[in-house]
Length: 180
Image (cartoon, rainbow, N blue to C red; front, side, top):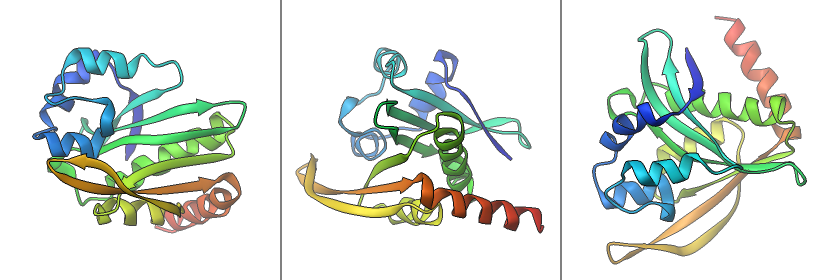
């Protein structure tokens, strides 16, 4: 069972250890970070007033298995963006990403009472795209040649989920989970 907990400075070194290359840093964090990732950059990232940063805690193994944030929280327009989604290398391909997305969207819609949650994902990251689609996210559009990384341009796929799309999807997930 995955539980989202507040990400703090005590978690920095573990997260830094999960970022092996400049290209991986761009794939995970976008242009706000410079390689190598360090404590000062993470301090700046975590102190943004419109962002909530989480670590994913596995209550069974008693360890941190991922990272995720909910940023650009806009109460007036009832929207936010999911970002910085990362499952630790040794815990990938176990459905943890899906659980993290389910938890953060529940926070967005139930606690923050938002109308829309969006995210951006590079179009070559098919496992992440499948994860977001399973959670009900829809493809909104493609930003072509959006970032230049090591001499190559990367396309960014914009996706979003509206509260009205999430509510039926969420109740469906709960019914499936209770039948096991």
